[in-house]
Image 1 (tube, rainbow, N blue to C red):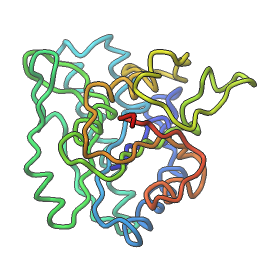
Image 2: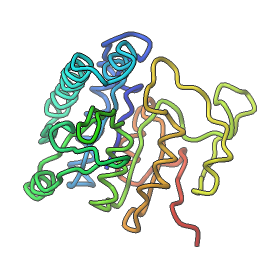
Image 3: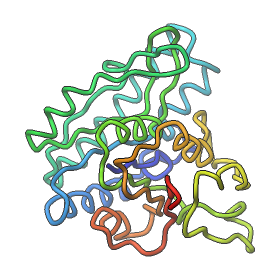
Image 4: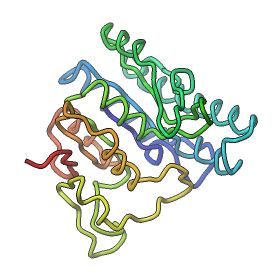
Length: 253
């Protein structure tokens, strides 16, 4: 399973902007890996300058207008991602999170049988951060979708393509910042996370790791955070050839 950060495929400082050169390269690398070394793939992507911008403009998702616009713009971004994957021969199929998710108290429930059947047919489901309705309406980040799906499908690899090489011990812009080769669940509260660039309403790198505390599953063998801006890294990550990255150790032996 690969989660593509919204900051990769959009410019989060500019509303509704697509980085087509990066998106197309990522789609090509996913296609190559799908054909050469991994025929069973799930793709999730973030909201970038689409969902984050709309939610920030409304201040919440507690109005009809906010719900409608968030769902609409995230669907638009999702179809752009699906189109790019299909262009490179990936049998990508969109699954709308707001259509299969129910908010239950502080948790969520996703109806996953259609996704399971799609995988059995050799399709590549493409899901995304979105709004969800239930006991209340709330934003479901792409990271949470990825972790939730991983706890159910137990992928051999859970990959997070971001705009940095991995997790650092401090703000990556600090010359003294050190890339952490591995991070354990016990380390998460001791890392000094930097603020996300651009608009971010879902918590960035900090939440990405904290979700591991909630959704960690015995079936996930490899959790990797890597830099999707670098050419070839996404292909290498899917095919197990990545060197510069951070591995999240869900269990200490």
